[in-house]
Length: 517
Image (cartoon, rainbow, N blue to C red; front, side):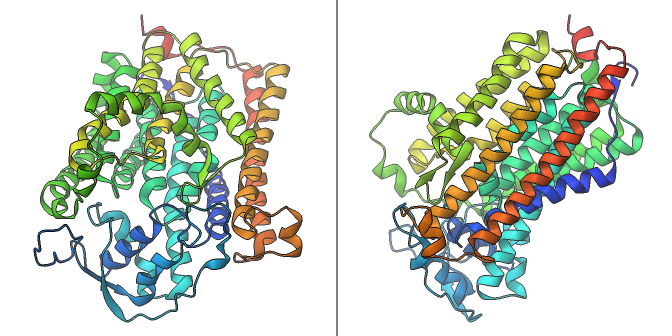
C-alpha cells in the first residue's frame, strides 16, 4: 500500500532469541514461586485437570436451595492442591508449611470456582496431567502455560519493532512486561496469558494499520491476530471486552481512508472471520453453558455501596492498581520493593506523558483513549457486575488494559519524535534498560526471600533456608539472571543498530503525521 511506510522485517532467529529470553524469565518465576503460590491457582489447576478429562461443564448437584459449583472428577493429587497455599495471605510465613500432595491418579469428586471460565485455556494447560503426576505434572502445567505466555509477548514485541520508526515502541513493550506480569504468566492462571494476548493483538493490529506489509507478512500477522484473540479470551469471558477496546483504539489510530484500504485486504477478512468465530464461541459459553457456575453469593454480602460509589472507588484506586501490575506477589500478600515500584512507575509515566505532550492529532487521541479505557472500563465492568456477583475486581484484572495503554502511548511517541538517537539519549536509554533489568532481578530475589525464609534476614537464606525451590534458590536466581542478561544483550545490540541506521538514513515524514490533518 503506497500510503504507508513499509514494515521492518524480523529474522526468524531474532524471533526465537526474544522468545527464548521471555521463556527463561517465565520458567524462572515458575520454579521460584511455590506451587499454588499465585492467587486462585488451585481453582485453575483443578479446572484444567477436569477439562482435559472431558469434564467441561461438570454436573450440577441436587438443588438444596444453596449455591454449589458443578461437580467434577479430578485426580486425588490435584484435589489436594488446595492445601498447598498454606502461606497465602501471611508474608511472615515461609513455604515450608506445604504438605506432600502425593501422586495418586485415583479420580475423586470435587469442584472449582473457575468453572464459569472459558475451557480453552484449561484444555491446553491441563495436558501434562494426562501423562505426568504429582508435583512434576504441576510444574509441567506451569511451563506449558508459560510457553504460550512467552510466545504472545514475543509476538507483541516483534510487531512493535516491525512498525517502529524510533526506539519507543519496543521500549514501550519492554516497560509493559513488568515483574508482576511475568509472575502471573508463569502460573496456572489465565490472567497472564490474557494480558500478553491483549498486548499482542493490539500490537499486530497497529502494525497492519500503520505499515505496508507483503502478502506473506499479512498472512502471518492475520493468523497472529486470530491466535492472540483465542488466547486472550481463553479464560475469563470478560476479556472479550478487551477486544472491543482494541478495535476502538485501532479505529482512532489511523485516518478513515487508511482503514478502508486495510479492510479491502483478504487476509484481514480471514482474521476478522476467525475473531468472529472466537467471539461467537465465547458468547455461547457465557450465555448457555457457564451460567450455572456463576456464584451469586457475593452480591448478597457486598451490596451496601451504591453503583455511583462503586464507580468512584474504582477510579480513585487506579494508581493503587498499578501496584499489582508492577509487582504484587503471592496471594496479594507481598509487593515489589518500593524502589522497583518507583522505577517502573516513572518509566510508565514518561511514556504516557510524552505521548500526550508530544504526539499530535489521531495519535495523541489514540493515546488518550487508551489511558481513559484503562481507567474507566474496569470501573464500569465492576459496576455492571456488582449486583450479580458483588465486589470482585482486583488490580491484576486490569493488567491487559494497562499493557495496551502503555504500547499505544509508545506508538504515539514513535511518530512524534526524531528517529535520530543523540549520544545523550543513547546513554539514557542504555542506562534505563540496565536499571529495568536490575529491577526485574531485585523483585525476583525479594520474592524468593519471602518464600525461603519469610521475614528473616538475608543471611538466613544461606545459613537456614526453610523452603527449597527446584534447583535451589541460588540456581533459580541464576536462571532468571541469565534470562535478564540475555534480554539486555539483545536490547543493547538493537539500540546500537538503531543509532547507526538513524545516522545513515535521511529523516522521513511518516504517514501518521502527514495524513492526520
